[in-house]
Length: 378
Image (cartoon, rainbow, N blue to C red; front, side, top):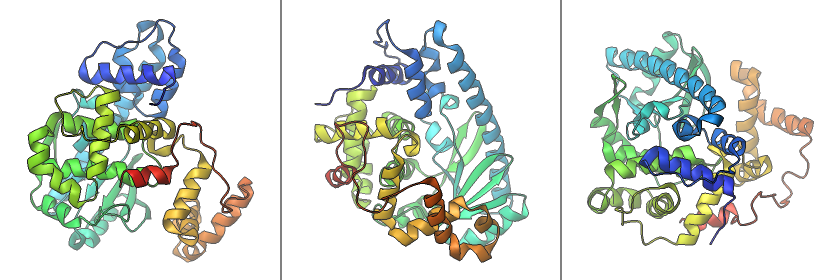
């Protein structure tokens, strides 16, 4: 059994209140500055603001207003992109973001990052040409995505969702693209994957970042709200379980869902997750709390070590060098030397003993080593 810092307990109580209208059990002596700090790291401040006592709410409201303004701008830009694709007969779906927010009681309170679009491989080249011709600035690309920017909003174009972190299920998303459905959010419509494929994206997103940079409460809550709205025992047994099993994510689905029941307020009428190893669920919660949104609070040494373990040293240096070197992003001639740039960058930052197998400091002594957690999640 793990024990949580009281500030974390208070944060979880606020989540229960905001999503399931449960009365938060927070002591009068609560440290609201610390709770705000944790909520900001996890990118869930707007979601919790209505349940913060009025005496402490000003700073929460300021952040929430900024988040709401970003949401309105992002939705406007998404609408323009949706019209562009429809006018040019490009089949597409929106991933995560608004496709996750539709399950929230108040979708505008979800914090948004970039806009993710998925097209099939056969449309990739023509889609890139269309986007660049339409005033979107190319930033970078990887095997899985192309990143663009316009008016301060980041866009990620995917033609491949599966990755080395779980089994190849690309055919599932291609089939989902063929059967895309129309969703509506704040009087704006957009194309998205069908219900269960959409949920699989949210689950795969958790695994993708758990095994890479780290995963936080915002992505866990996306999954929890999908389960709450769409994945009762019947839907799990008759529709979703086979999908999760095919992707190698069945154990993760069960563990995350049980964690949400135990700690985040997901109602007890969901019973398909009760076969879980409770200790693994608790360990996963510790990871989520300690790593922060996309691992922003994870120890940097650990992020680097995990990246090298996953990609190999050269690929890690080449990828991070490209991400950090603006000249390589702008001029192709510099790109083959991105790995060298990153070596000098590490040297300049004073990172020593990086690849020597040195033990990584972990903030919480209760934490399982990350690789052990992966193993137990299968």
